[in-house]
Length: 156
Image 1: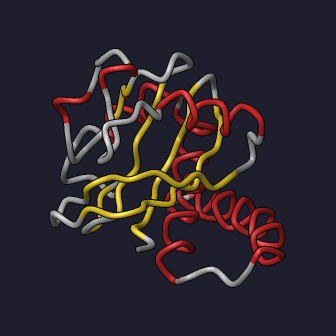
Image 2: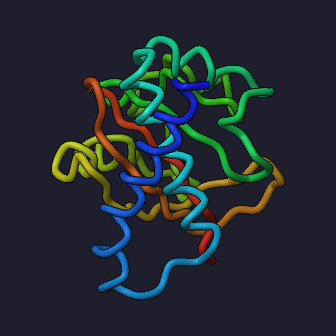
């Protein structure tokens, strides 16, 4: 219970720190707030139990890191997907082989954004969701323990 309270408090603190910067650019949607909260919870998970524990949890479709079209993904320092509950066939692929919906490599952009802004930044790209929607996805990314943690929402 104590650990869960710590994780919840850490997630809330991360979200409160990140929200003012996004507020300057415009109001967040409920979906964007949910993505940020999921990433904050994951970052707290890494702090309390380590990256290996998070990756194991993410790769379990029944985990708390997948909620409808919202899910967490984890990239290593080279952009290799190490955690993905929706498309497990992507795990371990060379990042140049993972293409967005328009056929462009984009993993390096995600890693670069997380490295440049370890406490959070938004990156847009085209992707399909678990429900089959293809559109512009905006992902909230943070850098923790040598990995990029992200969750995103389709914005158009």
